[in-house]
Length: 108
Length: 123
Image (tube, rainbow over all chains, first blue to last red; front, side, top):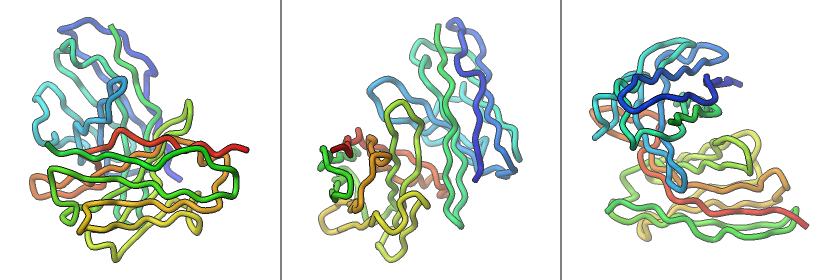
């Protein structure tokens, strides 16, 4: 079973600053990695798939990088609406394996 | 507006059964693979099951294989999860989620989620 580990658990930043979130896989997942944003009381919002491809409608300040076992989500200039919990997710089509990380809370 | 709405959750005794539903609006369910994902109290998101667009292919996490059945009725734009032999560890909020397709790619990632329905397994 592939385990996804996110760090840090909590990231304290100020509006306008850059935020860098990490996600590590216990074994190589190639580029089969997605990132989500989740705010309290809301469903997760898909930000990135394929490790670095922004989903439809996602602002350019969100960028993803990495492959294999190390991945990064960067928010270039934090806006007030970006304070949330961020999850990474590994996926494989066959056999179907989907595993979420534990999340990183981005707070002021 | 694209929307997924789960229903049918509730309290059930260990060993019991429950069927939860996910109604889709604003898009045609028949065009998408669909998934169920759950989140136990104080725990992370866990994938449960998926079904292809016409219902001919289904897959399950090992933890629910043989006990849960995913199905769909495209004419009713509704997704289902039949849960049998329920255990305390199945207690969770269950979310239906739509597989994302965009830019020529359809990764196993989710662009639409419902608000979730709570299933509690307890005596």
